[in-house]
Length: 466
Image 1 (tube, rainbow, N blue to C red):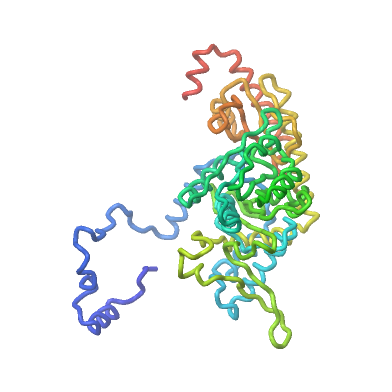
Image 2 (image 1 turned 120 degrees about the vertical axis):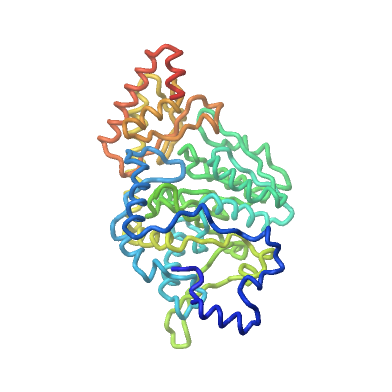
């Protein structure tokens, strides 16, 4: 379908009414050298059969692997009903629900999503999604600085994903906000309170607390939350929603609970899909509701007592005065939220708990199995969820390449972002991994580590550059 649906006769009629010879005459003020030329590099269009084949070939080029990668994106089982319902026309093509009278179904679904996320995080208010988990954290930082007014520093542990920290820095650095990175314990992989307390100053607005953190390690969220509140700081919880089915929710951390909770919702019914899309969520306490960006759907009744749903607390600046808006990233992920809502409704609280428990059991089994291999050791000694860090005697990049040749994506090489930890690998096992998967990983990794121990140094160097 063309972008401009008007016929040639309709175009001629319009330019005649305007009083010009052609549409080009409307742009005569623009110098010719600045105008876009023909799109010569764009190939000719394909028919349905050909484009279908191209897309299948490109999808297949990724290959089929047994996945042990986590780090913020997780392969979970998604019941078939989730996307059968999500891709119904009523949801799949639904537009932004500005007109409540025409969008009651969409609005009710978003309201249900907010209710579920509020229950999962233990906080009273939820929005109806943001772009992704990383930008949601940035929005939480901006909200905290607005709420604290003159305080412009944020305590950001290095146990938060390097990608998240980079995204937050990109979004807030030009707004006079400083991110103070906090070190972590080399033995525990967590952020000890004594390392946080050294950074307490009057111009700090908030402390970010991940749970679990990027290494899969559980932080002492209660102590960190109380420490921050005792000093007048806000607390931003960065959480994995699947973990919240088992762990204490942010709204219950310490004596008062976290003030804001954000995270990535992909684990709730959204497939990995070669890298996206994802969606971010944000919940907060009642006092910060005016600082929350994105949509909030409210429920009310009409004059006859019939329930109805509508967008509420939407500042007009969000749409027409960007400099006054709470956020300039207005993209939400309504379709992903639809899938997440259906996923959570199908599984229910007990189903989510069972999935989370199986994830933890499989990760424990994986770490125990791999930790028995000579040249492989589990790095941290604290409780964990979903993933863990292994230290190898060989370079992870070469080991991962060898595993990939066996149909296994073996984890994330941490040596670039955390060189002080040595040759380290972040591995993950969700409920989709079987005993056979874990045994296959152990067998191949043991063979690879043993073979590379026998290789002369020059051969190892060559193999690492293949």
